[in-house]
Image (cartoon, rainbow, N blue to C red):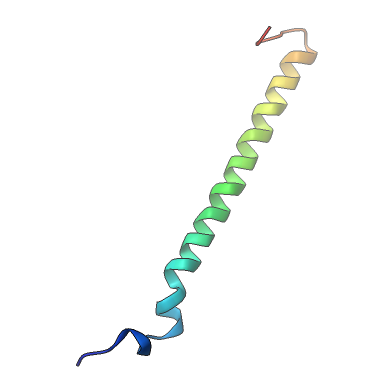
Length: 54
């Protein structure tokens, strides 16, 4: 049976977009957590008297 593109279900049509948005959201949250952790480690070193970049 030959099914045209227009008769696909809504879920089949938008599933790649939804998965892409979910992946972007998860990557964004992970990147935010990594950056805040790096900032916290830098400030902990800075306030303890160790200046890593100077």
